Image 1 (cartoon, rainbow, N blue to C red):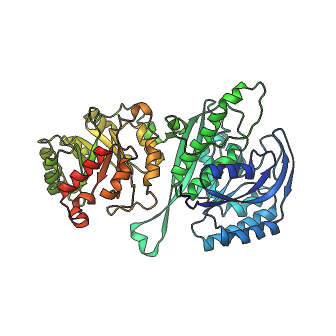
Image 2: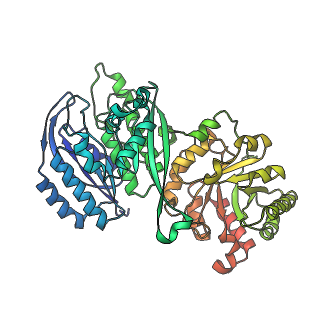
Length: 539
């Protein structure tokens, strides 16, 4: 077995001698999630599962020596910060992060504010004003509801009801400290005793087309909400530390915030679920350490630990029936060419493919409609399912078999009109968050990509790879695995197709692997189609 280099994270936090929280939780979490963990201890605490007796700060001189020695040897991708014991440590940390970001512009800092011990007592007496230098430099913060209220200065909110509104709290924290990502954990919220809802307020940095020359950034914020059943266990000591460390670990591995958020919550749910039986069997409420499970959990029960996505789209369509199936009668979907012209449609339709997508761009409205009319007419003479990319109104109007909609266009589409028309719906997804959200809409199929870098579209930051593809496939409920086929797309050629098929995916979508087959492999497009189909059948 070949051991690959692991991403490195640093954890700068306190030591819990009882082994449940702090540095101990961070190390156990990081190792479970496949990252290397370097630790700088800010304080040695005296505590057990019943009480906190004292917090003994480590001098900033020692912490600086450790950081100086480590930075050249083991530079971090992410720094996770927990207990900050005094004002001197606040200023040291703020200065350290500023220096590190000069030499490592992509460094991410995750701060889990530690105030009160869950067994009672305070870890520090720092005021919000004293913490401000650190809050102004960190990238991500993960407070629970009580900590979020302190950060948002609830006494200054206009209405009492706003004090428990996580969106209001997150916006207030962002307004005051400009922290890129604010995750308010749902474990302490009691609005619903049966469910825990976690909220993430995230800033996207985008470049406008008009301002790309001078690289001015436009700031757009987006929110993500996850809803999970509450799990009845007393083994939660260090759960907050473990969540922040899990988030740091997934960010260090290159996941986007929405997916790191989703995966971190699943990791926590998995650990809590493992201790439900032993917690229920105990006569007294022993406060045990959170159980870090190996990740990813294999098997059919993996999907149950992932949260439900709560957003406007899923709320708007929660009563919408499932979209019509592809009527495959037990067969796999197979090769899925995506082509951009009637020329290629005419050339591929006679090959007996089960599905083809027409994706045309840069046409006038009249030209576009005429192409779709012609395409639908051509496809009616064959058994191929013709999907139109994006233009759902024209797909309905002219009787296409289905329409494929990307994430960027999903909110603007009328899913009720599409469902009532009877045409099928395919949805693009990029990672586990979008996959679960789209799965909740019960489409006819789901696409996941880009598996590899592709010529046709810039997918920077959203390359999935084979491991992520396998993980996403395991998120389908077992009873729905074949009802909603999954299509892998992005950079798949004949050499890579064998490994893609081995993941268990039902279909492979290709573009240039067919249209440029003569240049890349010296074979005709028809021969490329035959070669792909042979790989899929053998797989």
